[in-house]
Amino acid sequence: MVDLADVERPLALFAEGIAGRYCHLRVGDEDATDGSSVYLPPSIDTFENEALNAAVYRLRVLVQLGFREFGTFAFDIHRARARSPALAARRLPLVHRESDLTVFFDHFDKPAVARSLFHVIESARVEAHTLRRYPGARKYREALEPYLDPPLAFLRPAIDRVSIPDATVYDTAEAVIECYDMFAVGIEEARRGAVPGHIEWEQREARLEDWERELDDAEAQVAAMEATELVGGDEVKVGEGKGHGDIRDVTRDLVRARDDLQRRIDSERSALRHGLGDTPLDARSFLYDEWDYLERRYRKGWCRLFEIDMGRDATDVDGGRRLLRSVRPYAQAVRRRFEQIRPMGYQRVRKLVDGDELDLGGLVEARADMRAGVSPDDRVYSRRERARRDVGAAFLIDLSASTDDPVAEDAPSPSAHETAPQDLRDPWFDDDDSIGGKPPAPAESRRIIDIQKEAAALMATALEGIGDEYGVYGFSGYGRDCVEFYVAKEFDEPFRRRTLDAIAAMKPKRSTRMGPAIRHAGAKLTASGAALRVLMIVSDGFPQDCDYGPERGNHEYGLRDTAKALEEAERAGVHTFCVTVDRSGHDYLRRMCPEARYMVISETEGLPSALQKAYRRLTQI
Image 1: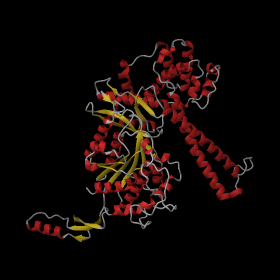
Image 2 (image 1 turned 90 degrees about the horizontal axis):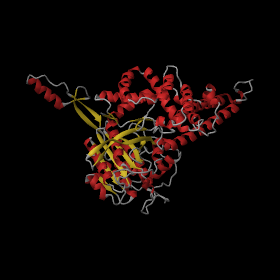
Image 3 (image 1 turned 90 degrees about the vertical axis):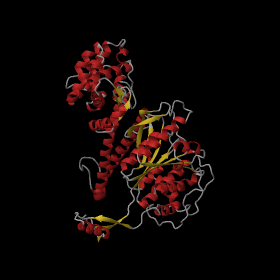
Image 4 (image 1 turned 135 degrees about the vertical axis):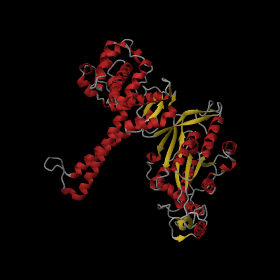
């Protein structure tokens, strides 16, 4: 038997290589495609040979991807009506913004029946094309034949007809019409359990991709026309003598068409998110185990984590600027404290083959070896080299709904009195050495999330000053199948305006499933290659989620899984530290972490200082 969790990563790469785009591999009925996912069984035990079972997974991936590759989603209702008099004789349904496949199904009195027939027949057509395109998969399909249920007898002629090399999706449509007319009564039995509507959603997603390519072309045309207008002015004409008007008129028409297309794309993307869920369609997903303390075992591949670029949420053009102004009074003091842990000057590296000075100790050893009749070591030079820290840090910020709560204490805001934007990497823009900076102006409705974002921005400022690599992430989600991991900055990304915009875009989301978020951040730290790896988790409460354990009100399961995730990180060489602004945090953090690896702060405004102290402690191990 082979579990999907065991082969998910190589299988995802296989799917991406075939499709040319990332695909989520989900557990579910393979009939239920949703536009960005391939649905597979949780395990396959058809054969005793594990390699054959793994090959069956690849075969199923190929067939599901074939719906896009072999033209299912290119279906056009007007072309279908032009090809089929029987379809044209039916009334064209009046629908708004639906896929053409939905319109096709609505031609029938029972759309669900037509949808089920279409899926059976079209799946057979796509599978036949797939096996011709990838002949290496035939032997696995033949090996599976004895284990598959044969199609219903009345569908056999239609399936044979669409399995020929030149069959298209329109042949499937005609076959559906024939089967529906011949077997309208009782046809619901043809495909019990089929999930209605998913194939239409996938066609709409394919259509959205086409529109986005059209938008790119439109943007290029507008840019070219504007450049031409800039160079040539009003004297330049487009299609002069053909009634096209001057270049400004043409540019306005292009801009209007581009804007209309952008609005259509935004509307369709909103509809797709509503139909397919809030997770962005281009987010990558990862499976992680979860520790079940009740059964004392890991639930393999139990949680699906979606990695989401925070840049897509950074729609507030002034968000980064406001965040910069709010942390400016603190930044200099924080940076000066961090500079105390930066290696200063140079260090001399000895026993080198080449260098700027002879190494006296190396010469003495070489001379002694020669006298003893031993071949001397030729590494007799030394060289001064600049000292370098090799630290990688990940900051993992809780974005649960409770971070929308206001700050409990009456504390002054860190808003600055100056409003001009300032480069945080400039270490001398504030002469005040205190952590509080200049007296800040009061602010209203400050929330926990605001303090967290400011702390993240301050840490980014400080680490830029000492040269440590770092990433800034947030996490939330709802349920084990939708853990959300938000990326504001990756390790290999430079600090820039986009970084501040992404941090500023962090907002309260949903629940707090810490285990998979810690595991994912730990995996990123391990991949960074840093010699010293640090993970700092900032939260405002204990781990909880709607299905984080068998009983929703019992938090023991979540605590145990989070503790296990922290243990796993430590075993992998990642030093962890948890900071919470929950005043009852001692009650659960002492059960999750060693005493020296957590901190409870009573005032949210103390978060930046707490992070600073913890980071200095961890990186001077």
